[in-house]
Image (cartoon, rainbow, N blue to C red; front, side, top):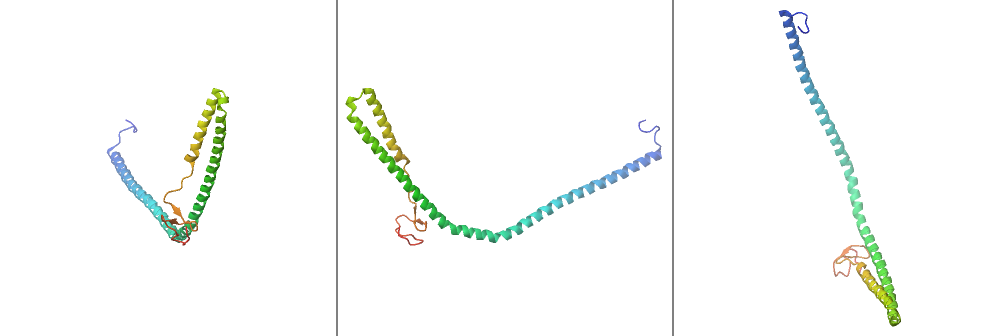
Length: 181
């Protein structure tokens, strides 16, 4: 018979069904309370997000003025930075030109040395002569390398030496500070 040692009477069946009905109604109420609870949870998330956005908005309004101030300071520093970059580039070009000059003098010394060796070719062994010719070919290759690595001046980019402003091509005076270029 299952749970009961005897079969329930009609009254007991009626009471059991009424209890099941009450429990079902309570369960339905609990489900509706649970959905309301979910609603409040979502509402709390929304309120928290809204408060976070309001906080960010207040901070943005506070920082708006300092950001403008920083932007103006950076804007004021640009000419100084441009001038510094131009002067450093000019110094670098001078150093590179000095390196090229040094390389050319070394090349001239090597050429003079090989010219002197050519004078003695008749007295040297043929293998030595071939070795010297291969050295001279390598030296000629070295002669080409400084030309390939020589610094190039940028075409169309001219800057004022006084204030560092960009100059138009063919300009003889700076349009910003009036310095003769």
